[in-house]
Length: 319
Length: 277
Image (cartoon, rainbow over all chains, first blue to last red; front, top):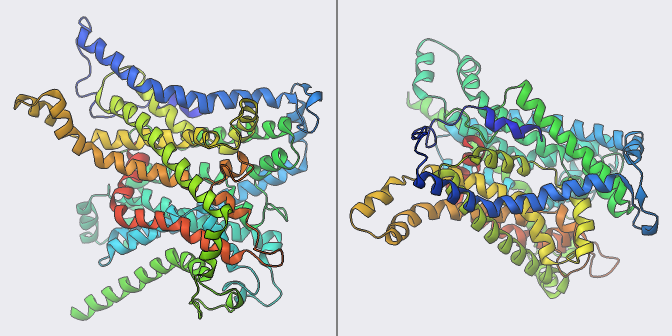
């Protein structure tokens, strides 16, 4: 919810809207009124659908989370206030899943930022096969996450996988908590670094070539050029990429579900929510978890926007 | 000087090879598995020694897979068409018209695009059971709107902002009727953006796993990503590895084709939507 106000606060983009803005106030002519009506009319279907598919279910989730609602005993449904939240927040399962999720999010986003920057620089600077490199980098991003997860799972399966062979025999990394967590991070990083790299590549395109040349002539080293010129200019792109990836990583589900199904303490909050709903069939608790995850995502977005001054991704980032 | 150029080139060559291997090796590995005979599955070779189509024949003979493939194609296509149609209308309005509330619209769609899908699963599960669309195509198409519609709106509005709309006026000055001006000037300019958006939306729907395993319970609407998670071998003593690998390759092919053909535009779509808003 927190980002909603943001686009309205940031100054309007320097194009289209402002160019012809400020029509004569007095004469909000018939034409302008017609334009307004057409605008709303064209947006209405999309708005109605978006409200129906998100706002309504979220409202309903809040309502369900205040009920005792176990699908095995539907007759016993009753209003229980916040006790589902109490149950979730005082349970070690929630906190374990929460810290696991935070750990996976923080580590994978950090690795992705560094790796993604490297990939972006390669895509930006490489002198040959630029097309081939860019196309290959896109493939992990496009590929179905479940497929990628299976590829990694098999790679680490003893006897079957090429990576498992590198380990001493008898090791099954996916059956131990820490090694499994790192493998989940590896799968996540492989899959989503390209997205990070593409956003950073778009940021790199904003860095004027002449400035870099001038710095080079003045004797700045490659590292100085990177930290003193490129990074500051790319800051908006970096922050947007970080925001996107953090929110995305926090809801990690597919990779964990395939790699470990949440066993050995590797379950994320999404896995916990899923399990409570489909294994325990407890709609009340499941909904409370859903709402808590939603709140977490809201807090992350809010932190980014307020603390780091990330322009809300709807607003204009520096062109 | 020539020597310097050569080492420079060689270095880029090595870097590029590393990047390409990094990106493609896991994909290659699962493809290789899919062509391995069950007896050589564990031989650890990166290239199958005995190439076989057996795994593919196997999955296409089961209704479990073919039905899931039909579901995947149908559901993703319908969701894409709806999202792109509604998204085009809204994005046109955002890019072209002046009306209060459009920044709110863009902000709202971005907010929704960042929604944690698990938060929608429990309410949707109950709503869909109550109104009877659980485990149906509609029951998946509707939740797919949560991410596909915002994606369509912001990608398309970024594309539409780049269109020189004045050309339409010019065409009218030159004597074209409004319909002609729209059809002959605007449609060709807008079509690539609409098409790219459709591909992006399709990839997102094709990828979905969480909704697909949560809101389906039988073959009637289960899509391939969900179906392969539930694959069992042809007998209970057999691991479904070969089948999963083959199914994985089948659903990866469309994505690779899209990426190969529309690489440049997909990049433009992803980055314009995200970075330029």
